Image: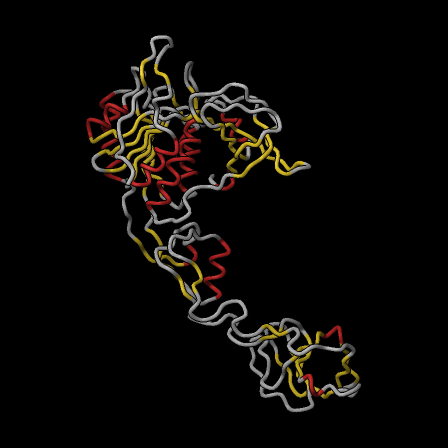
Length: 420
């Protein structure tokens, strides 16, 4: 089992200002410990119209065959291949539209049939209508058919008793169609998590309001709210919290009382106006603080009145990266998901990275196809406050601690379409 979560400080270095970063907890260790600390969550039944993005709480098995009977894959004529003798035409004995069931095929005849219609007993072949012609009331076949052509057999797609979707699978649009094809109207999924979202900072104003000197717009709230909602969770908006201990404590209490997870944006660094860390400790526990990650070092994790708490950095890029890499898998596991982490793909670097860092770096990058596979370039502005770099990029390029890159080297990337 993983070691317990610990309060993690840097180590003072007399030759450098502040703390050196080598003592900070790694991203991989932090994620391992966070996922070991996820509380269990309940389940509910939800109809398909409300199930997109939900995570299955049970395995789903087919109760019927799909298709439920042999049916025609073409508009044309159903017949018995042994009845095709020489060029002798066949009379049409019946007409079978989709949704209707024909009678047994009379020997030496053909049935007019349409796409999706059930194959009549006795028929073993369908001739596409463009491969034959009617001469009066007789069918003339102009091709040499093979037995079983253009027939979709019963159970071709799904057989009764087959495992269709496994517990922990996150439902996408195609899954809803698959479930509907089995006659399933509702599924048991993880209950919707309520996530309280609070923003700290006297400098913040909401979009649409006028800015005074020294103020900025709150970009974190809509970004984080969208990321939370993309996981099927409900956002409880606590709003902008004033930079005072009293306001911070009151907001944390309200957040913990209204949600299953609390997320704060800003206020977890070491400034005199950063009150979140101290108030979390006063109301519960702070189990983790500061990681060897760039951007996003001042990430906090703990409990507020027994409710899981994440304190994300206030810089928008840092908040985005730490949410995607650490908070997102936590929320997914809380809902019982089995796929928690996005895949990492190799790409060829089209940039130089000569500075070996003491924190694992996630560069805003853009992956494009090249002559020898995927190539990746990075945004020229890698500041943790440059949200335009996140809007521009389609991936994060991972630079491990102590590594440098030359143009043409392999670098692992995470596609943002897999996480945001």
